[in-house]
Length: 139
Image 1 (tube, one colour):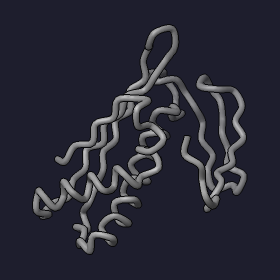
Image 2 (spheres, rainbow, N blue to C red):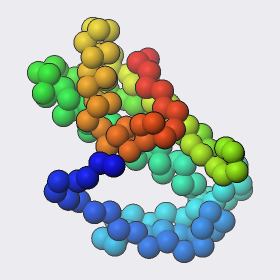
Image 3 (cartoon, rainbow, N blue to C red):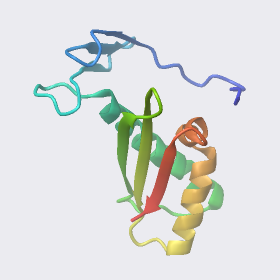
C-alpha cells in the first residue's frame, strides 16, 4: 500500500440519493452535481463521467510536472480524452479505462517517454495499477 508522506489537499463532499436523482456538494461550495444513471433521461451526470473528467484533468497536471522534470516544452493544445467503462466482474462490478493523449507537434518518441514518465508519478495510475485495465494511448 502507498502511504502519503504529506497531505497536500483533501477533497470533501456530502452526497445524498445515489445515482438516481442524488446530489453531491463539495464542502467549499465550488461543486454541486446532480446525478442520474448512465443512459437514463435527465440532466444529471453519472459518477463515471466525473471519474473520467477528474482522471483526464489530473493527467494533464501530471504531464506538466513530468515535462518540467524532463525539460520538455508541451504544446498549448495538449488534450486528454478519458473513457471509463463500468461493468460486471465475478460477483461484483469493476472499471476499465482508456486515456487518449494528444500532444500535437511533439516528436513521437519524446511524447512516448513523457507519457510513460507521467504514468509513473500520476496518482490515478498509482491508485489503479494492477487493479483495473488501463490503456494510455498517444493519438
